[in-house]
Length: 99
Image (cartoon, rainbow, N blue to C red; front, side):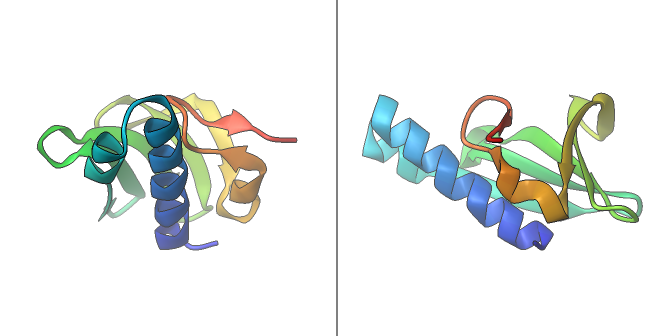
């Protein structure tokens, strides 16, 4: 899986959760942004006016981490790799392992 495919999966699953709990209007406002960096690629999500950091992917290995602060990966919150990304549900506040 590529980072862009992961971002699309995150957006789809997040919009599904929001529309089931709140409204389709709120779900349609949700966005995901990919920001490439030299060592990590960041995935942010939220409405356009209030995007928040969600994940950081190590470019060299494809490992997926949560964040401590924007631009700082939380190595204690590891969510597999890009190869195993389909083993997780990305639509909640934090990723949930499916298997």
